[in-house]
Amino acid sequence: MLILSRKSREAVVVGRPGRLEQMLKVTVLEIVGSRVRLGFEVPEDVPVHRSEVWERICAGGGPDSAAAAPAGPVA
Image (cartoon, rainbow, N blue to C red; front, side, top):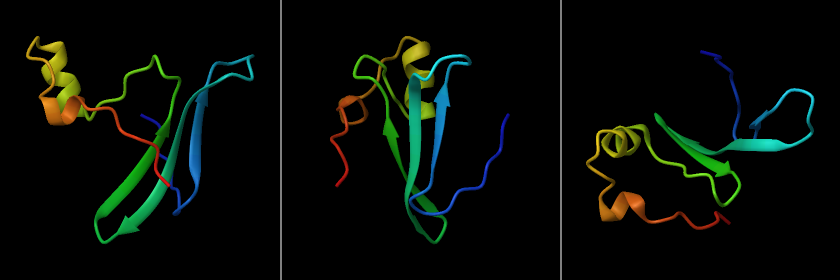
């Protein structure tokens, strides 16, 4: 596991070695107390889920309707 420290409005980019193609960008949008809001930039065909939802999907349970709704852009 790679562990990084980021401040509000700082980001981490994930890509493939040897390519300038960005696969995932995670930006810290806000830090309030112990809560951190993250923004994810990925291609439209890449699903992004909270880990507990992903585990339900992998177990065959599927996401619930509230968790499955695509997130809109954050202003």
